[in-house]
Amino acid sequence: MLETLLPNVNWEKMIEATNETLYMTAISVVITFVLGLILGLLLFLTAKGNIWENAIVNKVISSVVNVFRSIPFIILIVLLIPFTKLILDTMIGENAALPALIIGAAPFYARMVEIGLREIDKGVIEAAKSMGAKTSTIIFKVLIPESLPALVSGITVTAIALVSYTAMAGVIGAGGLGNLAYLEGFQRSRSDVTLVATVIILIIVFIIQFIGDSITSKLDKR
Image (tube, helix red, strand yellow):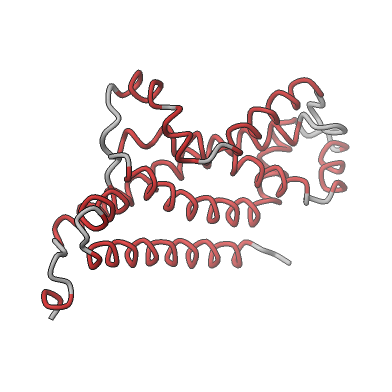
């Protein structure tokens, strides 16, 4: 039945491309979460009235975040070709997409982290300070736990964006479903290949959204 409806779909290639997309998404989400959390914390802590208040540092980090957050992803990939070749010695394959994916997504997530931290009741932070809590204690016992629902919600949105980024990266040879849909589907006028790849991407997005929403609702104490 499937062979009749989808005559051009090579299921082995489709499964391989799906695994490549999942690999690129998973690795980039983990690293983006760590880098974005660090950048977001720095943006929050160095802002006016906070523990590490420093206008210059805050301005520099904010500018870097804004620049990389504003560059369209497809252009960012091209700009990072020399850097990617330098560290990986190739621009082909799923690993070659990781630098662009991470550099493109981390600043985006950093802003979401900063917004989440700003929503924390100032009284909670002041109470921790008044009890003599160290900065590390405030970060790990107050800021992160209190903003956890926002952090999870933010990384869910970022993960979904990364799935679409992997599809764009696939167009220039990074592998994955985007690469398969473009080379095997679009360029060879095989609409069934493009359709199946698109449906799988949508399923991945729905699963990520469901997991993210479920975790967020469990963490949200309100």
